[in-house]
Length: 108
Ligand code: 2BA
Image 1 (cartoon, rainbow, N blue to C red):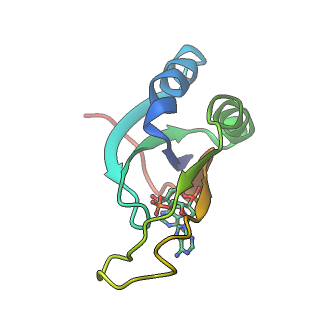
Image 2: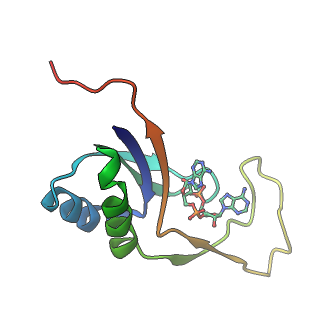
């Protein structure tokens, strides 16, 4: 048994959750915020059997698009991080995922 944490764009979260649920995955959605861009994203918690991890990753790849977003001009501590008149971009997503071993899973 594994627990997958998948961080996805808010714009993709509904469609990817629907697709996962349709394929029989159990999904919990958390509203989260990226530490770099400081904008909202969605973290999906998905508990599943080891042999379904490949299918899960395929669905995440299929429904989560990469996007280019403007980089903030100051970092979290308020310092200027670059020339103010030069807008830099970062590529975000599709999905960032972590696969964790589950010691025990149950429902009471
Ligand atoms: P954010 O932290 O808002 O990061 C948005 C994008 O900014 C990242 O896209 C990456 O392209 C860039 N970025 C993030 N941290 C950076 C840094 N220290 N230096 C330079 N560029 C940086 P993604 O890598 O696709 O990540 C999308 C979101 O997934 C992140 O939003 C964060 O919420 C989460 N995430 C990604 N990697 C993570 C990790 N190793 N641990 C925890 N959360 C992670």
